[in-house]
Image 1 (cartoon, helix red, strand yellow):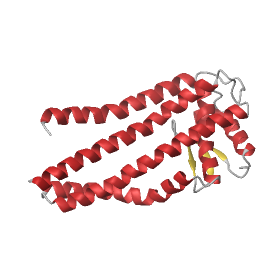
Image 2 (cartoon, one colour; image 1 turned 30 degrees about the horizontal axis):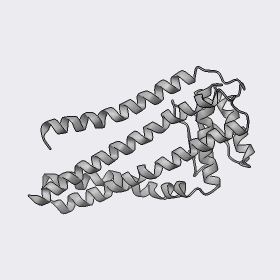
Image 3 (tube, helix red, strand yellow; image 1 turned 30 degrees about the vertical axis):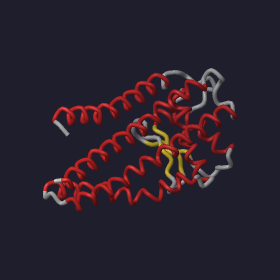
Length: 227
Protein backbone atom coordinates (compact mmCIF):
# COMPACT_ATOMS: atom_id res chain seq x y z
CA UNK A 1 0.00 0.00 0.00
CA UNK A 2 1.21 3.50 -0.85
CA UNK A 3 1.47 6.25 1.75
CA UNK A 4 -1.65 7.90 0.30
CA UNK A 5 -3.61 4.66 0.62
CA UNK A 6 -2.45 4.23 4.21
CA UNK A 7 -3.59 7.77 5.03
CA UNK A 8 -7.00 7.12 3.48
CA UNK A 9 -7.24 3.78 5.29
CA UNK A 10 -6.43 5.22 8.72
CA UNK A 11 -8.82 8.13 8.17
CA UNK A 12 -11.63 5.69 7.37
CA UNK A 13 -10.79 3.49 10.37
CA UNK A 14 -10.75 6.55 12.65
CA UNK A 15 -13.85 8.25 11.25
CA UNK A 16 -16.23 5.26 11.18
CA UNK A 17 -16.35 4.76 14.98
CA UNK A 18 -16.33 8.52 15.57
CA UNK A 19 -19.35 8.91 13.31
CA UNK A 20 -21.14 6.04 15.08
CA UNK A 21 -20.38 7.48 18.53
CA UNK A 22 -21.56 10.92 17.46
CA UNK A 23 -24.79 9.50 16.08
CA UNK A 24 -25.65 7.47 19.17
CA UNK A 25 -24.74 10.28 21.58
CA UNK A 26 -26.63 12.97 19.67
CA UNK A 27 -29.71 10.76 19.19
CA UNK A 28 -29.67 9.62 22.82
CA UNK A 29 -29.12 13.18 24.07
CA UNK A 30 -32.11 14.40 22.07
CA UNK A 31 -34.57 11.69 23.07
CA UNK A 32 -33.43 11.63 26.69
CA UNK A 33 -35.03 15.08 26.87
CA UNK A 34 -38.30 13.88 25.31
CA UNK A 35 -40.63 12.76 28.10
CA UNK A 36 -42.46 9.44 27.71
CA UNK A 37 -46.24 9.88 28.03
CA UNK A 38 -46.67 6.90 30.33
CA UNK A 39 -44.52 8.69 32.90
CA UNK A 40 -42.69 5.43 33.63
CA UNK A 41 -39.02 5.34 34.55
CA UNK A 42 -36.64 3.05 32.69
CA UNK A 43 -36.58 0.80 35.75
CA UNK A 44 -40.37 0.51 35.73
CA UNK A 45 -40.41 -0.22 32.00
CA UNK A 46 -37.82 -2.96 32.45
CA UNK A 47 -39.74 -4.45 35.37
CA UNK A 48 -43.02 -4.53 33.47
CA UNK A 49 -41.49 -6.27 30.43
CA UNK A 50 -39.64 -8.78 32.60
CA UNK A 51 -42.78 -9.64 34.57
CA UNK A 52 -44.86 -9.90 31.37
CA UNK A 53 -42.40 -12.52 30.12
CA UNK A 54 -42.34 -14.49 33.36
CA UNK A 55 -38.87 -13.25 34.39
CA UNK A 56 -39.90 -12.23 37.89
CA UNK A 57 -36.57 -13.31 39.39
CA UNK A 58 -34.45 -11.08 37.12
CA UNK A 59 -33.65 -7.90 39.08
CA UNK A 60 -33.30 -4.40 37.61
CA UNK A 61 -30.40 -2.56 39.21
CA UNK A 62 -28.93 0.90 38.91
CA UNK A 63 -25.32 1.27 37.78
CA UNK A 64 -22.96 4.21 37.41
CA UNK A 65 -21.68 5.77 34.20
CA UNK A 66 -23.29 7.09 31.04
CA UNK A 67 -24.84 4.58 28.61
CA UNK A 68 -23.40 1.79 30.76
CA UNK A 69 -26.67 -0.13 30.49
CA UNK A 70 -26.30 -3.87 30.02
CA UNK A 71 -27.66 -7.30 30.83
CA UNK A 72 -25.31 -9.63 32.72
CA UNK A 73 -26.07 -13.27 31.81
CA UNK A 74 -23.89 -14.50 34.69
CA UNK A 75 -25.77 -12.53 37.35
CA UNK A 76 -29.08 -12.82 35.49
CA UNK A 77 -29.70 -9.13 36.09
CA UNK A 78 -30.48 -5.99 34.08
CA UNK A 79 -28.29 -2.99 34.87
CA UNK A 80 -29.41 0.52 33.86
CA UNK A 81 -27.36 3.70 34.07
CA UNK A 82 -28.75 6.24 36.56
CA UNK A 83 -30.19 8.50 33.85
CA UNK A 84 -32.17 5.62 32.33
CA UNK A 85 -32.99 3.90 35.62
CA UNK A 86 -34.61 7.04 37.06
CA UNK A 87 -35.44 8.97 33.89
CA UNK A 88 -38.85 9.07 32.23
CA UNK A 89 -37.87 9.55 28.61
CA UNK A 90 -38.17 7.95 25.17
CA UNK A 91 -34.46 7.13 25.29
CA UNK A 92 -34.68 5.56 28.75
CA UNK A 93 -37.65 3.44 27.73
CA UNK A 94 -35.93 2.22 24.54
CA UNK A 95 -32.64 1.40 26.25
CA UNK A 96 -34.33 -0.37 29.18
CA UNK A 97 -36.45 -2.45 26.80
CA UNK A 98 -33.37 -3.34 24.75
CA UNK A 99 -31.50 -4.67 27.79
CA UNK A 100 -34.55 -6.69 28.81
CA UNK A 101 -34.52 -8.03 25.25
CA UNK A 102 -31.18 -9.64 26.13
CA UNK A 103 -32.71 -11.14 29.28
CA UNK A 104 -35.48 -12.66 27.17
CA UNK A 105 -32.87 -14.03 24.76
CA UNK A 106 -31.09 -15.65 27.69
CA UNK A 107 -34.29 -17.15 29.06
CA UNK A 108 -35.22 -18.54 25.64
CA UNK A 109 -31.71 -19.88 25.04
CA UNK A 110 -31.20 -17.75 21.93
CA UNK A 111 -28.51 -19.54 19.90
CA UNK A 112 -26.49 -16.50 18.80
CA UNK A 113 -26.31 -15.24 22.40
CA UNK A 114 -25.10 -18.65 23.59
CA UNK A 115 -22.47 -18.72 20.85
CA UNK A 116 -21.28 -15.20 21.71
CA UNK A 117 -21.05 -16.03 25.42
CA UNK A 118 -18.98 -19.13 24.61
CA UNK A 119 -16.62 -16.98 22.52
CA UNK A 120 -15.99 -14.37 25.24
CA UNK A 121 -13.03 -16.08 27.02
CA UNK A 122 -11.49 -17.17 23.71
CA UNK A 123 -11.87 -13.66 22.28
CA UNK A 124 -10.29 -12.04 25.33
CA UNK A 125 -7.22 -14.23 24.91
CA UNK A 126 -7.02 -13.94 21.12
CA UNK A 127 -7.41 -10.14 21.12
CA UNK A 128 -4.46 -9.71 23.47
CA UNK A 129 -2.27 -12.42 21.97
CA UNK A 130 -2.85 -11.58 18.30
CA UNK A 131 -0.80 -8.39 18.34
CA UNK A 132 2.19 -10.13 19.94
CA UNK A 133 2.38 -12.55 17.01
CA UNK A 134 1.61 -9.84 14.45
CA UNK A 135 4.28 -7.41 15.67
CA UNK A 136 6.98 -10.06 16.02
CA UNK A 137 5.98 -11.57 12.67
CA UNK A 138 6.20 -8.21 10.87
CA UNK A 139 9.39 -7.00 12.57
CA UNK A 140 11.22 -10.32 12.14
CA UNK A 141 9.64 -11.01 8.73
CA UNK A 142 8.26 -14.34 9.90
CA UNK A 143 5.08 -15.09 7.88
CA UNK A 144 4.11 -18.09 10.01
CA UNK A 145 3.98 -16.01 13.20
CA UNK A 146 2.01 -13.35 11.41
CA UNK A 147 -0.44 -15.97 10.17
CA UNK A 148 -1.04 -17.09 13.77
CA UNK A 149 -1.76 -13.46 14.69
CA UNK A 150 -4.20 -13.11 11.79
CA UNK A 151 -6.05 -16.29 12.81
CA UNK A 152 -6.30 -15.03 16.39
CA UNK A 153 -7.57 -11.67 15.17
CA UNK A 154 -10.12 -13.43 12.98
CA UNK A 155 -11.66 -14.89 16.15
CA UNK A 156 -12.28 -11.33 17.33
CA UNK A 157 -13.89 -10.48 14.00
CA UNK A 158 -16.12 -13.54 14.35
CA UNK A 159 -17.14 -12.29 17.80
CA UNK A 160 -18.06 -8.91 16.30
CA UNK A 161 -20.04 -10.66 13.58
CA UNK A 162 -22.01 -12.77 16.08
CA UNK A 163 -22.69 -9.64 18.15
CA UNK A 164 -24.69 -8.02 15.35
CA UNK A 165 -27.65 -10.47 15.28
CA UNK A 166 -27.66 -10.53 19.09
CA UNK A 167 -28.02 -6.75 19.29
CA UNK A 168 -30.45 -6.40 16.38
CA UNK A 169 -32.65 -9.15 17.79
CA UNK A 170 -32.68 -7.54 21.26
CA UNK A 171 -33.81 -4.25 19.70
CA UNK A 172 -36.50 -6.03 17.69
CA UNK A 173 -37.78 -7.73 20.83
CA UNK A 174 -37.70 -4.39 22.67
CA UNK A 175 -39.88 -2.64 20.10
CA UNK A 176 -42.38 -5.52 20.07
CA UNK A 177 -42.61 -5.52 23.87
CA UNK A 178 -43.07 -1.78 24.42
CA UNK A 179 -45.67 -1.71 21.64
CA UNK A 180 -47.66 -4.76 22.78
CA UNK A 181 -47.58 -3.75 26.45
CA UNK A 182 -48.64 -0.18 25.68
CA UNK A 183 -45.47 1.32 27.12
CA UNK A 184 -45.29 3.81 24.24
CA UNK A 185 -47.88 5.63 22.18
CA UNK A 186 -48.04 4.89 18.44
CA UNK A 187 -46.20 8.11 17.54
CA UNK A 188 -43.51 7.40 20.14
CA UNK A 189 -42.57 4.02 18.68
CA UNK A 190 -40.63 5.48 15.69
CA UNK A 191 -38.71 7.69 18.13
CA UNK A 192 -37.75 4.68 20.23
CA UNK A 193 -36.70 2.91 17.02
CA UNK A 194 -34.38 5.82 16.18
CA UNK A 195 -32.63 5.48 19.55
CA UNK A 196 -32.10 1.75 19.08
CA UNK A 197 -31.00 2.13 15.44
CA UNK A 198 -28.39 4.72 16.43
CA UNK A 199 -27.07 2.44 19.18
CA UNK A 200 -26.85 -0.47 16.74
CA UNK A 201 -24.59 1.58 14.48
CA UNK A 202 -21.81 1.40 17.09
CA UNK A 203 -21.73 -2.38 16.66
CA UNK A 204 -21.84 -2.08 12.87
CA UNK A 205 -18.96 0.41 13.00
CA UNK A 206 -16.90 -1.87 15.25
CA UNK A 207 -17.50 -4.74 12.85
CA UNK A 208 -16.50 -2.64 9.83
CA UNK A 209 -13.27 -1.48 11.48
CA UNK A 210 -12.38 -5.02 12.56
CA UNK A 211 -12.93 -6.38 9.03
CA UNK A 212 -10.88 -3.58 7.44
CA UNK A 213 -7.99 -4.20 9.82
CA UNK A 214 -8.11 -7.94 9.19
CA UNK A 215 -8.07 -7.37 5.43
CA UNK A 216 -5.11 -4.99 5.75
CA UNK A 217 -3.12 -7.57 7.68
CA UNK A 218 -3.99 -10.29 5.17
CA UNK A 219 -2.66 -8.04 2.39
CA UNK A 220 0.57 -7.49 4.33
CA UNK A 221 0.87 -11.24 4.91
CA UNK A 222 0.29 -11.94 1.20
CA UNK A 223 2.94 -9.40 0.23
CA UNK A 224 5.37 -10.89 2.73
CA UNK A 225 4.93 -14.36 1.23
CA UNK A 226 5.52 -13.03 -2.29
CA UNK A 227 8.79 -11.46 -1.21
